Image (cartoon, rainbow, N blue to C red; front, side, top):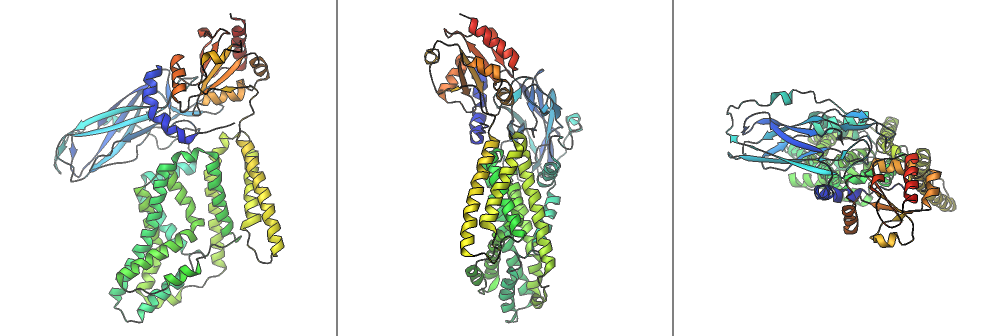
Length: 597
């Protein structure tokens, strides 16, 4: 079965340094960090160059590997008060083909330079400042990959008062071509990364315009009567225009704050759920939700504001505080009601783990949404001159529905390269969505009670069939080998049957391991010969104490490691392999093991 254990990646990541020393994995790289100037200056900006020297014959994955189960290279810094780090700028990766992969993999080799901009506030203390960071990576050779690891680095710089002169240093490192994008990324991913992580002004403008566009949707239109009821009632009290403007401004801030909380929650979710986006089933759930929202915009059903909430929101509250509370209420009403449009943005912010920036972007979206209400509330007489709803709003809603389908494809398509049967997976997804739509989401008028019950049963059956279809497509080819999965058995127990023993040390992040399962272990001749062996799989993705002890006893340093033991339990070291091996040489090793005493 194709299994990804994303929640266990973190444990492997934390144990990587100890594991590398314990099992004798080779040193993959060294790291040095260099500043762009001799000192830090208060209220100034400078740059750091993280220089990574990768050992000859080895490589590390790029910051955006072309296969999602591979561990990306990351540069991170320990937070320091009064210092702000930009997103690291990584060099362009090389696309190389390896024996264990059908597709080119984006990697770094030799010497690479990763740059980061640093902004110092005017309150940074005038004393030596230690900058700590680490490079997280996964090292590989042409046949095998090692456990994920970290390499720490440190730099100490003195701090000078604002306006002080400094000398430029290491200029050559900061004039190197860093590359403007990674060829392994899709166009959408490159654009999203540039806008959301590096182009903050563009991102703010884009989210502001999206907020404005939300006012064109029928879902948001019910908020207009709430605004009319609230500010129209206040206009009868003959408030001065300046007072109306202040109240309307607090109303606008309330809407924006509600959206900012949505963005903050999305960013925090991204910090906790980052690895979930590597799970096909999590992506299936996200895709089904987005497609359901698209169906809503196409008219399958309506997301309406609850009547009790509309009534409660329409109650007048006076003053700026009342306007602020009213704005918060309206924001809470709009956010779930407009979920069909903003859910893709929420998912993107969560996927990138943008916390503060996510909150800021959604706050600006709320400002864009609330700007017309600021104008209308200030000039209350305009409230009743708004354009009436009509077919133009239906057209806009369908436009947003098409954009949502594009968002669903954005999340879904990268998964297909990891699926054993992409066509079966897509058909299963279609069946699951069809079951939801035809059985439960379609609220068109005219259905009898009996027919609604029948379509619900039909929907359940089709939904279950779709899930089973997708599950079958996600699974790897059924293994032809009768494997024993290592669960702490002793060596004596494994050789007790009088057969030679074969160990396959593998991990979920190991691409050559998957190649072995797909090509070598599925070979008919290998499967036939395996009946004469005790075939043992050892999962090293997140090794427990027993697995760690077994890895240490066999000096396992990379994945996959293939070990043959004779009938007496003695390792045939000349047959040990680290990395992918094709069926023919593997059969030769099996024959030599069978003939050994």
